[in-house]
Length: 81
Image 1 (cartoon, rainbow, N blue to C red):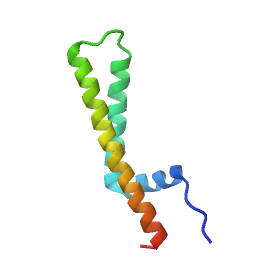
Image 2: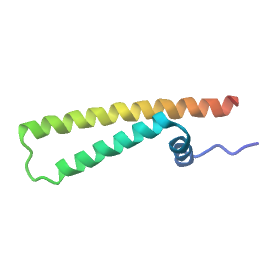
Image 3: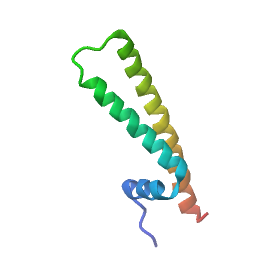
């Protein structure tokens, strides 16, 4: 009987094997860095606030896409596909 793969191990495996997952993760990281830059500012202009909201929405969409890939991969592991 195999031991279920942990979340971290599963994501690491996807990063090494799945180009789409790797691309999404890199884009997500890029948005993280952009948000960090915005968060370092003491005051955000209206344009920067809109940019912050837009980046957060894009990050969430990427996270959802990555989650879907993880779920599909997990299902494929269970069924042996």
